[in-house]
Length: 72
Figure 1: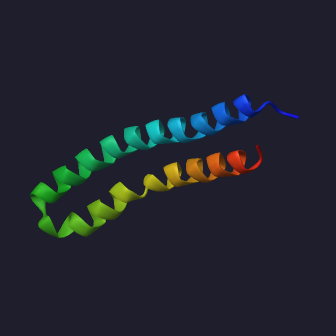
Figure 2: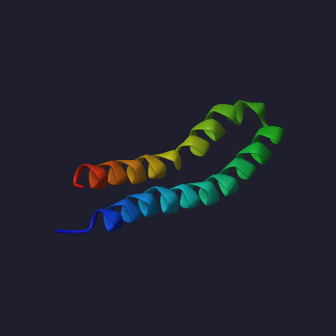
């Protein structure tokens, strides 16, 4: 049986690392999207969608954390 502390640490790392990776990805994507929108306002929808796509990484991390928590 795995110790509950290790499961909690793994769940925290799953959310924390995916959150950090998403923040780094969104930093680059958002700056490029804002630059594109200053030249053409019609690109707002595409920029918004491209900015939201990395959020799925955090959702996957949260799902992994919840699955780990349910196995405690």
